[in-house]
Amino acid sequence: MKQGYIVFGGIFFFLTGFLSGVELGSAKSEEDKRLETIQYGTETEIAALIKTIQSETSELLDSKLETELINLSQNTRNQHILTGLLGFFAERKKPGLEARALKAIAERDDEAHTTVLAAIDYLGKINASEAIAHLEDLLDANEERYMDAAFRALGRAAKGSSGKDQAAEYLIDFYTNRNPPDQNRREMVVAIGETGSKAGISFLSEIARHNEERPVVRMAAIEALSKIGDPAGLDPILEALSAEDPNVRSAAVGSLGPFSGSQVDGAILESFRDSYYRTRIGAAKAAGERKLAGAVPYLRYRAEYDEVPTVKDEAIKALGAVGTSESKAVLDALFSDRKTSDRTRMLAAQMLIDNDPGAYADKVIVELDEAKKNHQTPLYNGLLKAISAAKTGKVEGLVRRFLNAGGVIEKSYALDMTLANEFRGLAPEIRGLLDDKSSGLARKARATLEKLGLPTS
Image (tube, rainbow, N blue to C red; front, side, top):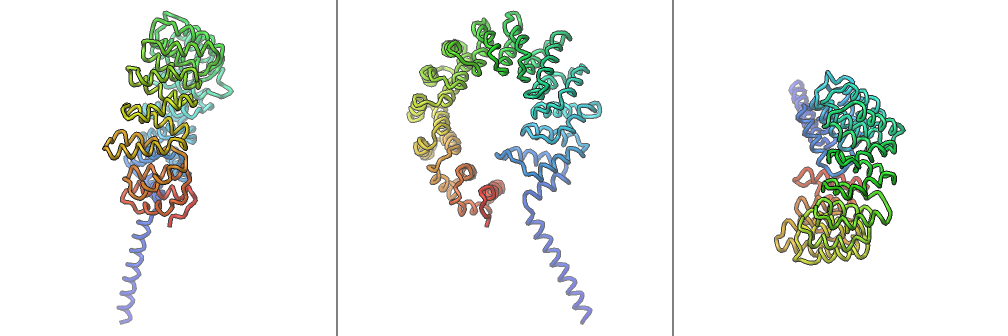
């Protein structure tokens, strides 16, 4: 009997331990599961995880997860994983992979072509000034397959750094003295603008004024002068407004935003009359960038009557950017008229909410409910997106309604609005989503509570 009891007890404790292990496994947090995927997953599983993280709205990355991803990049020999990591970090402009990216460039003969390109792109997007010399060495090697990417990255890496003048001079010398192929010239000109160096103004001005230059290169020079934004580069841009090529004219007017003065204002207003639609788009963008109040009548006319939908869109965006009482009145009229196209109403609503959510939230909510009642799905979705950006206490009732009775998308937007407006009084409704059948929504609800400093139970 004593021996039987011991056997039974052993079985009991074995089963207890087994069940405990099952519970522990099922109780793993989402963070723990992700960390395990990084540590032990296949390239397919890791790629799927990165895709999931990319789809999440927050730009923040858990510090443990970030550390593990950086460690993975240092240790993996899998080119698919490494290329994916470089692309992911580049998209978020996050440092941490610089050493591995530089190694990929230095040992490029042993790396996959796509990995080297991803490394070059990453170094540019994070403005890695320490990469300047390495990128110049790569360009000196004249490997055509990497040159466009390296030119772009060099300009970005030099931007704002103490080496920007040197990088600009290197690019100018390369363009002038090394006879690069035509297909590389545009990228070189763009890169000079990216550096932000005044050392490039004279060179770029000469190209911008050169009527025999290929339009694509001339346009790049005009836009590069705009990126540098120094008054010394204004005259070539103004001269290009009279170019025969409509694409050059549109590039010129679109490049006026950083400059000031009555001459510039007059040039922008005159460009609204250009028959080429891209020039009118450029005029609208420039007016918005400069918050040019004098452009409001022109923008209203374009928003109402232009035959090209994208011109209408840019005019509405510019009205929002101008942000005066006159421009908001135009937007309000466009939004309130139910005979106006859905596309125009949605964009006008977005601009009104961006400008003055407290004044326009109630009106947008009324039209949102009206669109739902009338089964106007595209309009409803557009207005939903617009109202989701509202930072005002006036949306709290809508948020509560969505949390209690909305669909998955509505609840997701409600969580965004809760966080943006710090609606801590909605904690009970948010906790009700922690067991939602949508794991993504449940995860987002938990994250929202944590960010608001609220208990999850």
